[in-house]
Amino acid sequence: MKQHLRKETVTMNKFLTILMAILPALAFAQPGKNNDVVVTGGYSPKLVDANKIAEQPSIPDTAVSRFPISYELNSRKVNTVFEVDPIKAANVKGEPLTKLYRGYVKGGFGSYSMPYGEVFYNSIRSKKSNAGVHYKHLSSSGQIGDVGYSGFSHNELNLFGKSYIKKTTLSGGIDYRRNVVHYYGFDKNIAYSQDSMDNPFLGYDLERASIKQRYQLVNLDASFSDNYPVDSHATKYKVDLNYYNYADHYQAQENAFRIAGDVSFYYKTYDFNIKGGFDVYKNQNAVWSDNMNIFNLRPQITFSQPKWRLKAALNLYATSDSLNGFKFAPEVDFDLHLYENILILNVGTDSRLQRYSYRSLTERNPWLVSDILPLNTWSPFRLYAGLRGSVSSKMAFNVRTSYTPSIDNQFFYVNDTSAGNLNKMTMVTDNASLFEVNGEITWQMHEKIRLIAKADFVGYTPDKELKAWHVPTLRMSYGGKYNLRDKIWINAAVLTFNKQFYREFFTDNITGEVKTIAKELKGIVDFNLGAEYRYTKLLGMFLQLNNIFNVRYERYKFYPTQRFNVMAGVSYTF
Image 1 (tube, helix red, strand yellow):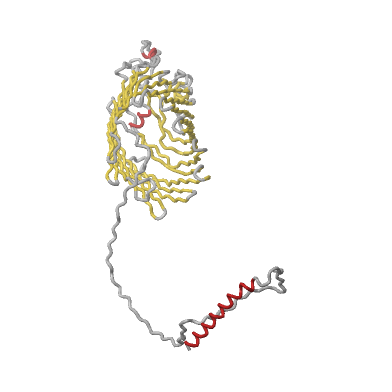
Image 2 (cartoon, helix red, strand yellow; image 1 turned 60 degrees about the vertical axis):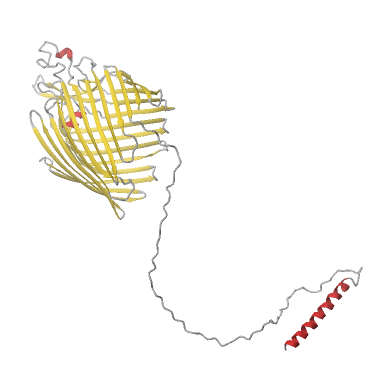
């Protein structure tokens, strides 16, 4: 069979050789004739299947054998070692850290014989701790009009420090203050007169040393808290401890201790917060002594969604005062984002038991009599609503209104009419309602210009008293700062009060009855202007002008303030 195939192959090769020789001759056999081709039908080229005979033919085997396959998996632990190569921390290239200086001193002298000095000294930048000291002195021996000696002195020393230990921050401080004022609320022309008919101060010792009042404070603070960031879901905590001793020139003394805690944690999607505190007050003077304990607990839960936030709390108070005893009130606070994060509506209710200690009362009004009695005020319900937001990236605003239908034991400052204290002040208490409106708007362009305007309307309605004594119903302030190339800083402030009322008595000539009348104290406009010039980065000079309009006004009846005054000085950083 192989021989037969070989013969057919030779014959085929000879035939192809003869055909290749004849084709060129046929191509040129009829020169000069028309080469056009007329197609008489549709051309459909087809390729005929080629049946090639394999050089190595094979016969398919139709019989297929299949063998069953079985296998087993033998589990075996393979010990592997995975080592993580340390990654070098990335270095962020940017501006170098601003150089910090340890010390800053500022001092000057002004009209009304007013020396001023202030010193700051701090440790520089550290990841482990921070500590510093601050001292300030301001005094005046100048005289205000025809009233008694009105000199004063304020001295303050602060020591403070912080230590960062792993996830905890420890901080503490010691404060010392010594402030001296004088009860100058009397007319010298009348008080020093020998006419007994027109001199209510006859027999008073009104010399400088006799009308002196000194307040001295020693304050200790300590706290420890976590170092977690604000947006962390970790449990956050803070504990504060405070003790102070506050004493005056007339044997009045107050000792107070406070411990307070604050814990926040998350459970599922809820934010829980628990605040608590315990206060102990011990007061004594030449006439009486008084003790007060106050316990407060306020658990709160917060529900949050992208467009709103709701806080619900229960405010609990327990006091050792039989008049107050145990009190509690629910509280709600709701935020609604009206337009993204630009416009936010806030409404809610709250309650408050406020302790007005001897320290807080005399820090507000240092001309109070020494035997004033501390008190607690209780507001079981206050309704408030507000709107805050941003008009642009430079301007923000905050408007808020509130109404408190009842405040138990609210106090008001009045002039003392008791024998021996006509040049001093005291206070009266009454239940009252309160309506408030507060507004603030700020505008800032980079770090060069900052403007701020505030307005507060405070409307007390006492139950028995004719007026809310010495409380201006409208307070407005405007301020601004301007930075000129980090060389000149200019600041301006305007403070305005509308009219207020003080209490006075008169005797009815017909009935002989002593009646209370309300008299008006005019409103004021106080304009202040200051400037600071940086001669170098370390050395500067400042000038401060106060009460530029030279307005004579009385913050409290018979207690006028200084009129136009000026102070100039230097500052140095080291």
